[in-house]
Image 1 (cartoon, rainbow, N blue to C red):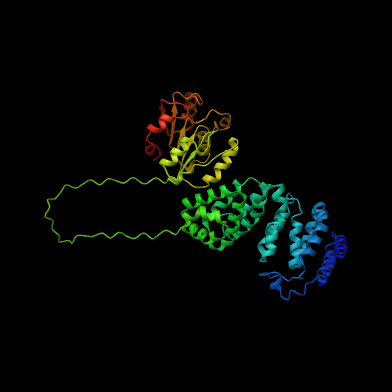
Image 2 (cartoon, rainbow, N blue to C red):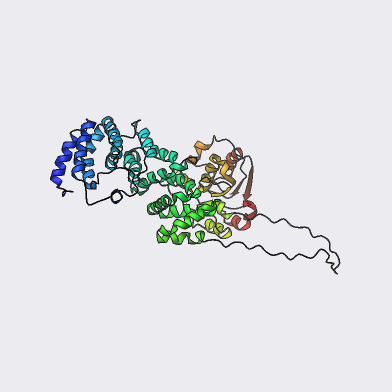
Length: 458
């Protein structure tokens, strides 16, 4: 390979760009450039592209980068011709030409209706890891930035529960968006990937490692919360097994946070029961049969969640008291507007069922709206002086009534959220409602100590 003279390379690529609108001529001059810069020191294809099944010119990356820089503006200004040239490059079938084809797809506006069919077809037929990565990152660059909703819909299709073969594509497509510091709306991504992490197929261990590490770097707290939630609630035994296998590649602080949940559990030893022989005769007087008491099923505290009020936090008095009474319950922090808080709540609850939601004041408003819009996920709703009169609730007043068992605890001395109008709304909205009126103020300090919370929550 001759030494790369940048001035000469620029002259060659400028000449190549003149044939942008003539795909056959472009290919002719492209082959000449690729042949000119063949790196003969790389003796085998495995040295160039490990795992690839494509032919290669063994051309240095700097040459391809210069070609991309030269044709970028023309491709963006002429998407129709860019697609035509991309098809020709792809059909050539070489590693370098397919990488250039993937680059051209990334210059085409996401509104172009012919973009996704090509992307779908090409990702299905390619096995080369480098080209696949380019298709799922470079080719989607404009869609990620300009139409993120469209991009996430595409990823949703990749991650469809019945299309496990495309899950890897979905994860790899998400990585550049997660790593983008300008993108700060992580909850929709967490919602998308939670079922895949729960399923935890062993074939996706490398992809899951990349995903979790990327999420942790973007938002450590949200990632830790998601993984703990998954490990506490997943009924799939492979979840903990797969996460345990890949955890050694996690950042040390994340390993430390998950260590107890990933620790292998000891097998339960069956208790030996000493049986009396059939011919055993007791000298004791026969006693009356003792009536067996039925043991109550232990409450799953990981399905309890407390939603704090507007100006409160997870460290408020009630939050701490609930956490002490019911170890393991979820007590997250929420910030921002009502809509922002609901977006923060959604990935926490995910798609799991049998939640018991406790909402205080503004948190009661949040719990009400979630329960009314996702009734199948909620086993019971406990509202403490719920702020159902706030402006945000107006658009939900026409909701269909729900039959979720609901208890509302409200004080007669509440000077923040008046009892009577809230009760009128609640009685229309909840068909299975228990309204507990107590002699207390808005914060319900006295009532908290007096009420039997085990019975209320059970």
